[in-house]
Length: 392
Length: 153
Image: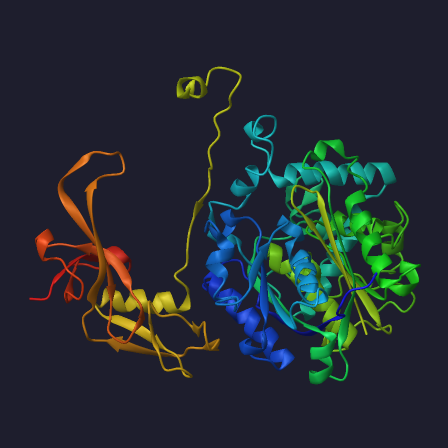
């Protein structure tokens, strides 16, 4: 594959994640964008184009939310594009930013992800009801927890995974989240497996501590062409691979225990990056973890573990931040440990890989050497996989 | 045609509705604006770089893309920048008397407000008309604390 320009990441920004932010969506977008520009050492005048992602308009409660957010995201009077794949949007935005530059058309692109779920009343689940089939599912009062409990249960039963093992994902991520400066109040913690398994049952087998929260927040990344990046930094971090794939919205067509669309997205990104053996060539990973089991589900879809093997590796500490022989997974704390402002949470995953590869993740820095990492998000109606690989 | 899809006892349709509603925070700048409005005052944000004033205030200048920290009270009155007259309500019923909707701008300030204009004959409404707000007796911190605007007396 040949693209006119290689694409570098120059800076990242992230607001604190909150249950109910006072800031408007525009204000959140501005704060994250400004932080990313500051890390890159650039001003808005250096930005040629802006990409914005946010999940359903109904959360912010603003129809055509992309247009509403444009000025806060730094997109005023610039080529501006909103893209959208629900929960997969945070990583998808980076992919869109990537081809703005890879095409050779722009030198720089600011990618901003924003979500303000707290505006949606009485609860964002009311909005989620409307993503389901209006004839067969919505009249039942369906919500996300129903469907994910069905999927989790399927995964557990096909691979014979005990609930206590799934709970280890929440234990790991909530502990990792203690070290993230953007962690939402009350999310991170050093929990025991017993506390996680015995927390309030949301929708069996999903318990309170095995599902991410409703959050407000924003994130941003500054991308640049190779020509531009080399003028402003000696050590650019490159986007080596991107991949995305959308499955049908008929979620009932799937087997539920294996996310094929994530595998297809991963294969696309590995091919582009020239990666033959991802288990050796990926040194840190941020898979999407809105539910504890989803991290394992996604690690398998990303081909970093055989089907049904991710939980066994988890028990051995293979995915821990301080592993020396494994692959640290969600060292940021992820959605379970930091919070889940949907599009912003996906972008947080790319920001974490950027900081991990750059070596500036501070307390969250993986123990093993990190030359390359992968971020993945997932969403829409349990149907999309989006993948970005960053490397030195 | 509509008759068909309004017979909800028939199996061919299912009546769906959006059950959610929203609770919007005013934000940092908005909170300040509406708190001042409760005191029957207007504030604008001032960009530290281009020095332009913005109303309603905001915490950033979208052109310079820098943070705005300075907010100043606006003592001048705005002018009618544009206007329209409403003769019917949303249900298509004729109003007893037409309503006047105006877009108001302050001289040398970016932005503006739209609102109702009263105590004026339709034929006297014009561009540049200087107007003053008529407030509720007990403001609650929202845009309807201004009952309406009227020509400056």
